[in-house]
Length: 301
Image (cartoon, rainbow, N blue to C red):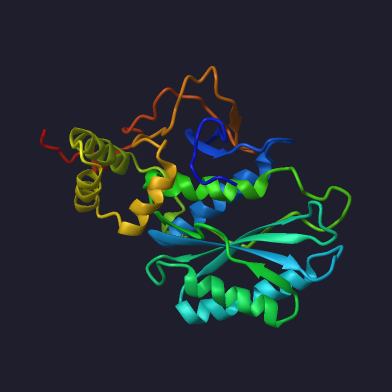
């Protein structure tokens, strides 16, 4: 898949009144129920940690199986090892697919605290070695293998969600077997963040969005790309890695609904099993908590 989000390879997906750009399959479309579960899973992880690492790896099987028992045994063991190794919650999102090969393969994403680990190389090599040493098949290290999601910061979260939305394309999924095509860790929201109003801010915090818009205005005044990136890093505290990744998504804009074009020309999808309301703009004053967050005044530059 391509990593630069554009209007030709993505569609708008509505989750909790906010619009996100997700992968646009060439055929058969998206499994919206599975896609909603991906969003919820990321939201759950962000309720536990304000920074979450998403690491990607592909696993090819040695032989075809009508079930996922070998993978489930493998991932259960690895999650136990990683939990002790990094002393944090470790979860996964996985898609089983079969295309032209006689065997099936798995697209795997492992999620864990970004405070414990902020780069994927050690983790992915560890998973690759474990999969291959157990004789389960071969593992492939993918391009741009990780993302760091910051709670409430849509600028950092949307590229990760776009990448994960590739998992939920209907194409290459096996329709005639009992094995599940989508596999997730069992994960619940942190008890500290069970309030639905707060959950809405796990992916999009209006205060953070407002700050990013203000910073973007400053960047636009700087004609030097290097100077602009330096200024953004200084003002926002976003890591160099995050800024490098952002180059892969140049079409994203610093707004609550990035990369928007004429809505009449862009396909729109809605999350499943949720009450969805279309709004031209999400009010930052939905409750007192939001209002308090936005009480900080910004000086004009």
